[in-house]
Image (cartoon, rainbow, N blue to C red):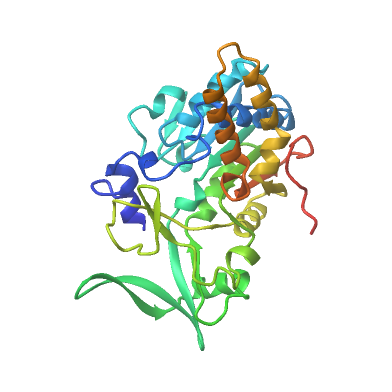
Length: 339
């Protein structure tokens, strides 16, 4: 998966077509709306961090800089906008990525420590490489990739200790024959995130859920899929480098790893509730008041809003805000943990 997505010569993100030709995201469904709403959320984060100036925002997976551009444009309307220092982290940047950024790094490990920092990401963790494991009658096996007589195929080997430890912690409900994904690279991301400042607010938006959902009997077939031209396929070994590979995010793992690195509090909820709390419902009202609004353009705006909040579309995504050295009570639209 690492090579298929990020190989310098043939990786999907590094050498393939423009990714938005294969999928859409909250950023791409509308030219500015998601960024406007995220700017409101960043205002909450700014207050949570004690109104720092400059206000450093680090975006993981900055892609082509589209979200950064939307946020920077919206930031002009906020008191923290003049002090915004926008840092992008992207290992496979597009030609225009840096246009909306103050600084661009290939890895969060390269970002220097500074004052209070907000970290955001939208569909970043789902594209981190995963390992595959399957529950057998006598334990767990890892499904590795091998070259067979007819091309790439999966080959079983006894699961190593790290796979068994993960499965024991997060996948106890997976039935025999069930498949799970084990995401790699989580620990160093949170280690470096915690290193960035004494006070950090980190917001993750992605699809998935808590471990009891992601590794449930309902999803026993696993969640790893290949996306090509807006079509999903479970044949993830076909056409390496020409399809996006992605799997559900285990948010319990993110919460646990955050705690181990000093992110002692969190808030979590669905994107629909999060965006409603940030005022997405007011967008159509304001749009109708524009003198150049037409029925056709209004329908397009309404469709974008629907996609962002629909429980069968992007609205089902999870939003997780984690805090280090802060009180997250100013964060709107997310629920405090009950455990």
